[in-house]
Length: 469
Image (tube, rainbow, N blue to C red; front, side, top):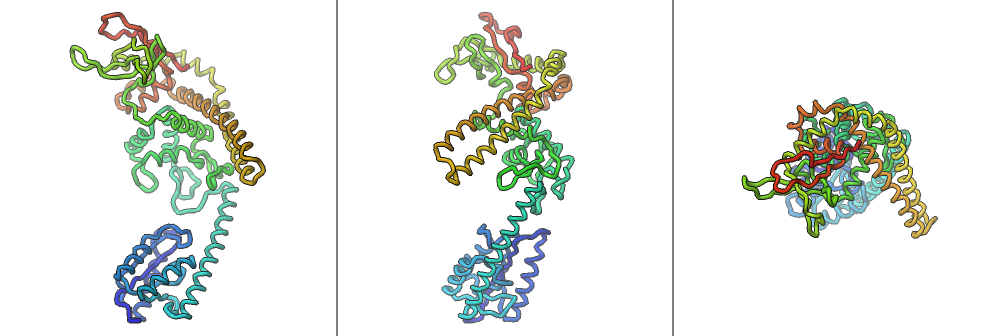
């Protein structure tokens, strides 16, 4: 075999705890020294840092090197040791077949074996098999260690800290933890994930990686068991964690119930108007929908009871939108500061305990569902028994989540009580979803009565609000 003129150095390390690539730098330095000893010319370096060769996950630089070998750009490969290029015997065989077909040598910086010879190939296969055995044993040890840490409520490994916590993964980051609590409260009040993303951006709060917020990331933060002081392992909650909760487990259950309710409702179109879904026809109890109507002075937006196959209303009630929205907004903010609301809230002191009981009931039912699944997998119950029992529990979970969702609205109303004047001064700066959340926390709906024939001005006596409390 002729001396290679364009050799690739491949370096890899599974875990780079410091994130500085020192491990692969040492491998590359030793490979350059070996290339000089052999008289080989290095054409390029291919580095997969912090990447396992045992897990089966993609290795971009390894794939790029193989493509360069196939194209003839590379005519030799230098590695620190066999276990750097593979920890799976089958992968070593695949690489060796390519090397034999194209006619390129593979050498290690840690030895003199020539894998192009029969003895060298035998040694390579032995080393690949030993590397696979070592990786499997290491994987078992890590798995057992992680199981023990999870059972003790301790944080998992990994170099990246969770949002809301300092690098020790136990102590709260004051700014981020407060952001999580604020997001939870505003989400439970009805604010959208998109609105929360805009709020985080306006506040200058970044993700752990310093990136912009996306709605899936916000959802993950809101539903995280960790943020509720719970230890999750392999997708299941295994107990309480050693760190303090940022939000309560009850709040987390309310958030999960809210996401479930939104999934069932199928609502995806963002709100465009303040009172969408909150106005009802006094004649048929149908919802009023907003749209533009031609008037003498141009277009005027109205909320109308709509007849037809899609809405099935009576079509007899309509109200001009802008003054109705202004009047409802003022009524809601006034209501927040009234003694009547304070008295109504005083009679709801049992709600926190009720929420906790509902959350506990949901958690118990979810655990029972897991137990049923295991029993069916082990052939202890039949498919029919499993399906029958699962339906009963699923229905109960759905009902309790709906109840929990209702209690969360009352909790948000308690937080808003007495804030009417302050919110009035901020109102124009709040985005639409935040405004809707405030209105919906106070107002269940408003019934719109028929107007006088020919009347063109807004009559507030036609609008009868139905308060939540």
